[in-house]
Structure formats: structure tokens, C-alpha cells
Image (cartoon, rainbow, N blue to C red; front, side, top):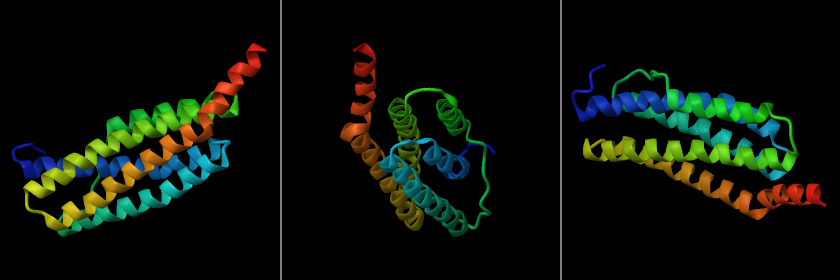
Length: 170
């Protein structure tokens, strides 16, 4: 596909984030299983449901544009998912693994926030009101997920990881 207009760029980016979200639908259950913190497990499980809803919204955007939902391999998300998988394969203290999972998940959220922010702006510029609203919903959920992960880290998971190091020093 040639990127010869903002509309063609919009469609290209839409296919990219569609693939990204599909990757996350597969990755989030694994992350929930790998987490030792019940709160982190719940956060990943909750975000899985949100991600499934985001996929449905993206499919509505495609349909609204008269397009069949098609994915374009999102290599950025593939790399982020691969990093997360490597963390899940690591041996280590559960609290430290949880802190690493939060960091990996936040990298994913920031990637999605950037993608949805651009897509929403493109939709607005193109006068695609329905797409703009649907993409804004996805963006808002990603921002809320990022804030939830920050709260979990600051609310005890990172402190538990610090305590592991302090216990080893004694």
C-alpha cells in the first residue's frame, strides 16, 4: 500500500494497531499467569477484556470505512511482546518478576497510547467522527491501564522488589 494520502496512512496504521491488539489478546493471559501478585493478575485479566473490546471497536472502524478488518504485522508490538516473554522465562524472585512485568506492560501501554493518539488525530482531520470517538475510547482505556500499572508498582510491588534486595544484603 502506498502512503500517498493521510487516509492511506490512517488505514495502514489501523491495520498495524489491529495486529498489535490481536497479539496482546494472546499475551495478556500468559502475563496474568506469570504474575505472582493477585492485584497484578487481576489487572492483566481486566485489561484482556478491555483489549478484546478494543479489537471490536477497531473492527467497527474498519466496517464504518467500508473495509474488511485486516492486520498488518506490527513489528513494534512483536518486539515488546517478545521482551515480555523473556521476562516470563526468567528465574527469580516473584516480586522482582512482577516489577519487571509491570515495566514491560507499561512499555506496551505507551506504544498503544502513541498509536491511538495519532490515529484519533488522523480520524479527526479526515472528518471520521465515529472512528475518532471509537479510537478515543481505546486511547482512554490505554491511559487508564498505564495509570493502574503505575499505581500497582508504586503501591507495593516495587517496594516488595526492594525488600528482596534488602533481605539478601542482611
